[in-house]
Image (cartoon, rainbow, N blue to C red; front, side, top):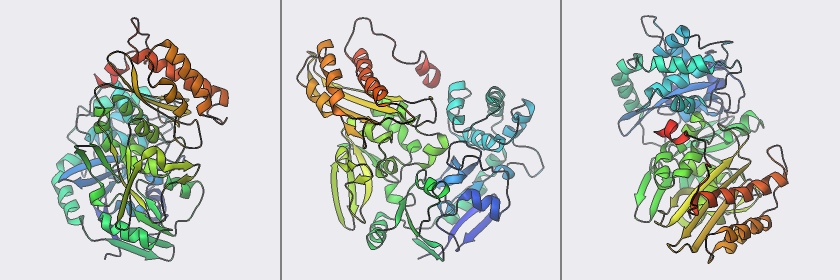
Length: 491
């Protein structure tokens, strides 16, 4: 068993054995390496000022991702190569094409956010199929905030940079691949320090044994939630066990019974497969956090933390997803909605962890829609998220209904009374009226800064009406989506 992690920062190799569980990449860069180009802004993964570039070797391919250094733990860099804004300049002193474009087109104003923008732009330029469409660039930069309203020249700079894709990283990719190949290690690691213990299993068997032996340890996948425990609540983590480094949990499989998503798969990697089955779910995922958050945060981690406003659970509950859990050598399954018991309480035993989620393939007659309602379109917490899945026969009869909401209760929850009011009825305005009445009995929502009880009740009923408008075959269907969004973003 190893007692260290290994990674590269730029061209410099690091082998570290004294790694505290709570040390973030941002703090290590600024306080230990004195690399202050990476800025600390919100310290919770929202502003993007701390964005760095991480490259890993996956299936012998280099995968480049922008992540928030403020909520990434240092030990998560094991086996990777990290680049900061200080690493972008070429050996001859010339700027990276993204940096040069920002200079040429005046993309920097006060300058504080600029390194984070630059790193996100470099990451986007490395993305296969990166386009110069405004909508795609806006998606890539949605996790970077500029309080000087300088977005227009930044987008122009991104378009200019995409015309010069041959950067220093392209010329060094063989060297990067060789370095990362040498770092790949199938051996489990455990680092014990005075500050705590970090366990890095490499197989699900090792994970099961480690967690069974230390059920009080904190499981960490992408750290987009746990990272805030440290940076905002100032919690200590005496023992963490990593999920994301477990190779056999980093799989997406199209099985006969449905789409399998392993516990180590981040949203970025799962989005395309989910969207192929449920396009609306794919669109909601596009609005979960930001590119940096989706690059780190996992589908199963979003379920595991049990948040009543997590965007993933309602999407998958409506789709009939099955959760797979493991404790030691014992495995079990349960419908996803049964996992959530009460606020802060889930059906998970001590030492038990989520191995993955199975999403059944939709039947041809299934009509699935999902709607996220939030104060702003990008990178915002949902006030309400409604997911609707009705199976309607050719005669217009509702054969089955699965309706799930987030933000309406202390847990993600099905609207059972609403479903009962619909099943067996014709999908017409009378059924809609009955469902609108029933949904008032399904939930007793709270009032908070994102919406009052009245607002949530009203919007939930109105989302039913929106779903009806889109699926009932109305002769004159009203426009229910942002005009042109599909063509602009995905045409």
